[in-house]
Length: 204
Image (cartoon, rainbow, N blue to C red; front, side, top):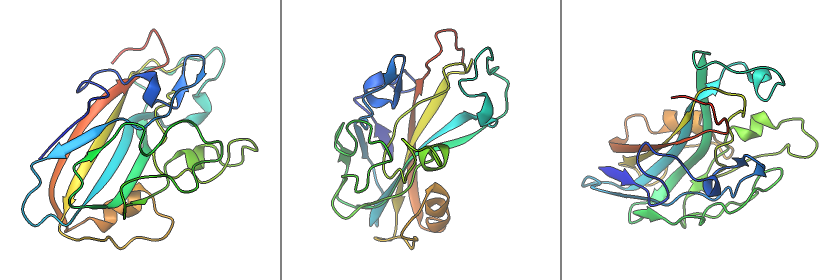
């Protein structure tokens, strides 16, 4: 199975149009185009994740004045998108069809393929307690790496072909719930990543 995007080149830069953060504030926060093919026989649904594995593990450093986060700083995952129960006939998601702009407090009912369910992304925890931005962030919200981070972040879009039409998930689910639910049901997986940074001096 293969996955591709018209919105960014494989392992290449993601335009600010598809990011939550831009050098001068918020970006376009549109979801990128994605398309996949080569799903195996018996595929009954797809699941989709977008994860940044390069998030600093000490969030207090993000944007801290006078501090640069070094490339070798310990990293962890930051989830930008989790979607389940994508119908088996779907092979493409158009750019901007699931997210188009920043919704303060998160999108209540993000659009997407008919029948699909979208989970919480990690901005839910990141903005928790913020009076202006706090809320449940469902669906896609794009890159917003710390502007003082020396590392170029990678954003992995992963699609899973599954042998079930519906996953057993809680009503409020995240990427961890989705990854546990697909265990034993994955027929194939494909991934592609793009890169993004807000630091002109960042390195890979």
